[in-house]
Every structure is written in structure tokens, then in C-alpha cells.
Length: 149
Ligand code: DQA
Image (spheres, rainbow, N blue to C red):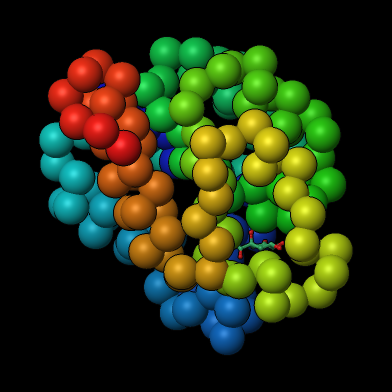
């Protein structure tokens, strides 16, 4: 099983950036923890501050992935193009936001990506990524007839 974890703009600054919203842990450190929690699956991580690079990555790596965990950062609220790329790839995807975007500015309340995802995990911190992976595992098992989601 191969799952892509895709982070959008400014998420390379996790651990330093606005810790009141995003905590004190860098994604690189958290990724190592994720890998040790999910040794049975191949986790592939990509982060970019560029919308085009995120789209290109999805085009290239998305079609062969079993699932996608995506935190588009601010592009979630603005990018029809990134949402179209998710739709084009057509793989099971879960959207994550570390902070509770509904407790923040109104412009963060809408996500173009959400319409292209099975569901969204919002405001549960970095743990949201682990929950998204767990869901995608169950989703794939259900599709192969092993368990129910
Ligand atoms: C975010 C929420 C977005 O509104 C913001 O632009 C981010 C991070 C989150 O994970 O909480 O960059 O996606």
C-alpha cells in the first residue's frame, strides 16, 4: 500500500510558524513518527510552496497511489486547479487541516479540495494525518472486501 502525503505552502515552516495554531513539531520529525507507526505501508511525502509543483506532483505520482492525504494549506481555500488535479487523478483522498479552520477567519471556511475528497479531518493537530492514513487503510480493506468502513 502506497500513500502520498502532500503539504502545500508554508507547511515547510511547521515547528516555527504560528505555534498557537500549528504546534511546535516540524513535519520532518512528525513524518518519522508516522513511518514508525505505519511500518506496513509506504508513505511518500511531498511539500511545495508552488501551486504548479503540487499539481505536477499529483499528475505524476497520484495515479499509482492507493490513497492521498492532502493539506493544501491556503491553496485549499483558493485553488480550483489543485482541486481539478485531485479529481483528475481520481484516487481516494482525505483532506487534513492542522488547525480548526472553522474557528478562524471566514476565508478559511471554504475548501475547494473538500469536494474532491472522501472526507476532511480538521483541527486535530498533526494527529489528523495519522487518522487520515488509518481511514485510507480501512477504506482500502473495505474495497477489497476485508472490513467495513
Ligand atoms: C492550514 C489552514 C490554512 O487555512 C492555512 O492557510 C495553512 C494551514 C492548516 O493545516 O491548519 O497554511 O491548512
